[in-house]
Every structure is written in structure tokens, then in C-alpha cells.
Length: 130
Image (tube, rainbow, N blue to C red; front, side, top):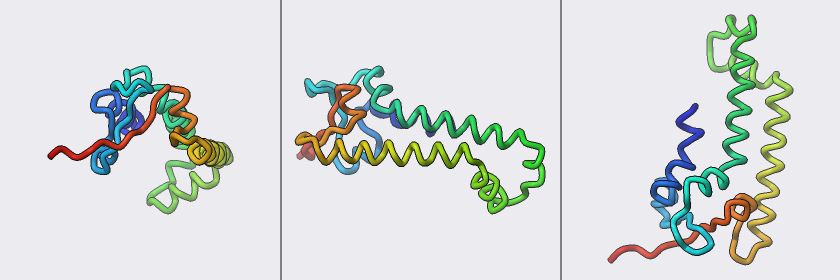
């Protein structure tokens, strides 16, 4: 959904973290430890945004197919999605990107991923308020 697409960049631009990151005391900041800008938040989430939009487009194309009218339950819907070669390719590309991100995370001493490098951001842990 649209809410899911804008959730992470919006939270990171406004508060520096999603609620999940806040719970575990993580925050996204720039290399200078200042709050991230809206542009940085969008760049940081570019891969996720692109993938989400691509999946929405493919799912909309599936919805437009005449055979979609016969879908009456979740299992039929999942079967129809599973039959989409394009959706399967998108998933494979996304898995490849996640593996690349993991490689950057493991190799970087400061634990920066590819998307953090692109946006010039980093995730830090902050202390609890006393």
C-alpha cells in the first residue's frame, strides 16, 4: 500500500527512526551525526521504494486480468501471484539486493550498508534517558 511505501522514509525524516528502531534505541543520522534530511531518508530507502512500487504495478496488472474475477479467496489470490513470472523475478532481484546489503553490513567496520553509503547515513544506538 501507499502507507507501507512511505512509512520508513517518512519516519526516518521526521523522527530519525521507525517505531521499531526507537524501541531498540536505534536512530538514523548523517555521517556528521545530525538528523537525516528528507532527501537522505528517500535515498536510504530507494531500493525498498523501487521494489514496492514495482510489485504494486505487477499486482495491479494481475488485478486487471479477466481471470482475476474468478478469485474468491486468499489461496486463489496467492496461486495467481505465484504464477507471475515477473513477480518471481522481482523477488529474486530483491533477494540479491538483500544479500548484497548483508555483504556490505558484514564487511564495513561501521556496519553501514549500501543504502547507508548512498545516502551518507548511519544507524547509531542511543542511550536511554535517565
